[in-house]
Image (cartoon, rainbow, N blue to C red; front, side, top):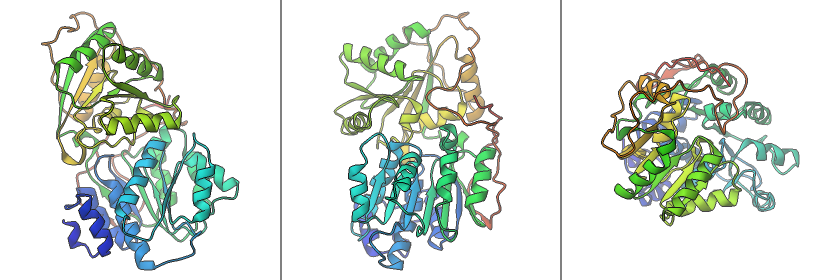
Length: 427
């Protein structure tokens, strides 16, 4: 479906054309017609599938059709789990609304609130927020949500991982009963399904790009390597391969800083992005990476969700994730919007069970690269230690993942069925 085929505001279509948007992605094609009709929607889709435009464009179109209201009235609220994702969503709204008389504001913690509250006083139509700062400003009387007409909860499963669902429920109580609600999650554990049932009214369900098939355009490989040799292998690959920009995933914040220190010593331009960094530091690191001033960004999972870098050539999993679905989220930073990319994983002597779980999830064997100077010796495998998932506090309760939503719906859109996944015990 071409965007110009939709009966949308000419100024909105003009901005889309200038941004290079011509053909809708599957999630956009399935979701937008329903959202333009102001129906609630439950979407199962990963980052990188184009879901921001899938909900942003109908919101902008519907707001333009409704006409102007009081400048201090917040008409649309988008909740995101991380600062980086909130900023990315805000940038997308500003791109699409370039020629529209609508104002977008992003608010998040970790920075001073005065610039944010000043913008709120001037008037905001569309508010993109992280839950903590939003509740803080509601408590101070800077924000009222009683006239919100459009509500989006994005990356709901990540909010569960980060222990945010209590805050989300508090925010929902501030919203009017009559509104259009959109709920997006890459996976549907039981607690997320229950939350969706309390937010949505007779929703349309859209399921596209299930977690096991989101890797079709990405060339994957795994390097068996001793834990002590990982830094050597990383430097070797960065020197030997033609890597324009590389995103490296570390399991821990300390590990990310250690990797950056070694890369700088080896002559590379590298920066780290994780939860211990200030917001200004994180934004500078991401901006430098996007502008190619920095060629290597080392990140933990929480900080990296929301990183959207066009034409990112390589993702390197320095440490394998302990939750197999996280593997797909990580490598999905490359191969964005159907483009190709390369995902390289390191597998040390403690991580073979993690690799086996990943291959079971994606239903394929990841090609093993043995022609490399740091090949792990046979017989070096040891049982993987039981560890807590790092940098992401889990909420209480089991992460039972259901293959389909149980909340009521009026129409199931086309698209592949969600992959059923094994239960994962919260840690």
